Image (cartoon, rainbow, N blue to C red; front, top):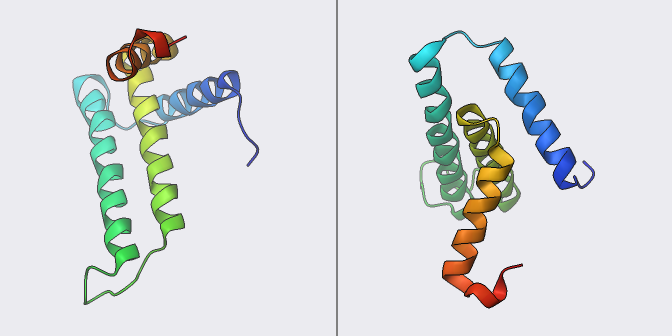
Amino acid sequence: MADHTAEELWATIEDLHTWLDDNRTHDGPEGLLLRMLKLSEEVGEVAQAVIGATGHNPRKGRSHTWDDVRAELCDVVITALIALRTLTPDARGVLSEHLRGVAERALGSSQTP
């Protein structure tokens, strides 16, 4: 897949959000809760891939690769962005502002644009 610009990234997130909304089986608070819980599922898949990549489970051995871990991390990011979009139509602005605050706290105000 080609690199996405920020505009393409957010357009794809919007398309995925719309697709999920059009195909959801639960509405209201239950649907919102399930959308948020999907993030925990994806994080669990990262953990499973790390355990598989390190061979930590002797019964399964090395069942995953670090490429699998990277793919699962991407799924976490995508799922988090869709969850954020579910909570606000301005997900891009909310993320940008939050990232700016985190960078300022971590790097100091001289490091942020």
